[in-house]
Image (cartoon, rainbow, N blue to C red):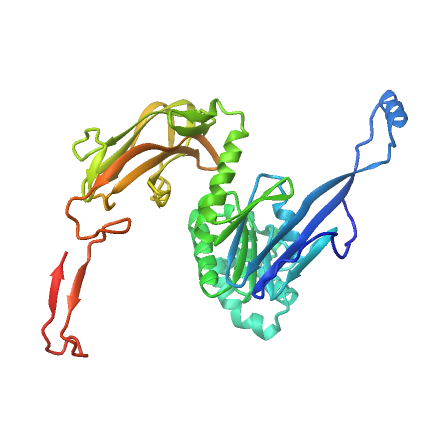
Length: 438
C-alpha cells in the first residue's frame, strides 16, 4: 500500500482553538493507494483487460476529516472496530505517516508504544536497545543512564538484559518496550493495544504506571478494545467508524453509544428494540430469562429503606458453553444519574464457563441509597470482546423511601460523624471535644 504526499491544508477545515492543546487534529484525512490483484487465468486476464485498466490502483481513505484536540494532562481513549482508523491516527500523531489533507500539531516529547518491539534492533541486546531508543527520543547519554536502572527494574528483565532481543519472547518485548516508553519523561504517551500481551500481574503494573504518569500531568492517548481499561483511564473518548469521527465526549456516554451500535449491527438472535418498557439487545448466546429484586429474606420486593439488604437475582440460559462470561448491573436514579456499574470480573469473581440454565446474584448487604426511584440495567457480556449476549437497559424498577435518615439530599447515605470544639486552635491538648454520631 502506498502513501500519498502531504497536502498542506484541507479546504474548508476549521481550526480548533485551544491554548493548552498538546495535540490538535484539524480536518485530517489520510488516503492510501493499493494495487488491485491481477487475474490468474488467461480468460480472466482478457476479461479484466477489456473491462478496466489491469494496472489501475484503488484508493482507501483510512482517515477522513478527523478533528479533535487533547489538552495537557488529559487522557484520550480512542475506540472503534478493527479497520476504523485508530492505528492510522496514532501513526499520524507520531509522524510515521503524513496526512493527505489537514493539519496536525504535536507539542512536547512524545513516547509511543504502537507495536511490540517497535524501534528495537534485533541484533542488539536489551541494554543496547534501551540506549538506542532513548537517543531516538532525544535523550542524552546522561539522561538515559539516570533512568536505566528504573527501566530494567520495571521490566523485570535483569537476567536477560544483555541478551540480543531477537531471542526475546513477545512478552519480554512488551515488558522492555513499555518500560522504556514510560521512563523517558514523556510529555505525551501513545499506547496502542499492547497491554493485552503479558501476564495479568504485569498488565496491572503497566496500568498503574500509566495512572502515575496521568497524575503527574503526562498527556496520554490510548487505543484498546478493553473498555473497562478505557473507562478507568480516559478523561474523554473518541469513537471512530470507517475512518470518521462518529462521536466524541464523556467516557460513559460515548462507550454506551458505541456498544449499542456494535450490538445492533451483529444480526442478533435477540433483536434490538423495545421489550415491554425497556430496550433490549444482544447476540442471544446467553439469554437473561428472569430478573428479580429481593430483600434480605430472599423475597421479591420493590420498595426498600436505606440500609436494607437488596439482592439482584439474574436467571439465564446459555445455548452453548460460554467461557468467562461477564455479568454486570448498573443502577440509575430517576433523573438518569448512574449510581454504580459493577460486574463480576471487576471484583475478581470469575465464572469459568456456563452452559444451560443458571442463576447469578449480586448482593448489597446495606443499601446506601437515599429516597428516590431507581432502575437497574442488567447485562451479560463477552469478557474478551465488546459484545453483549443480552442487555436489558434500565429495565427493572425499585424505590427507596425515607426511613428517617438525617440525610435529605444527594444520592447515598455515608456513615460518618460530626466533631466540634469550642474554637481553641490546638485540638488534642486538653480541650473538651464533643462528638455527635449519626
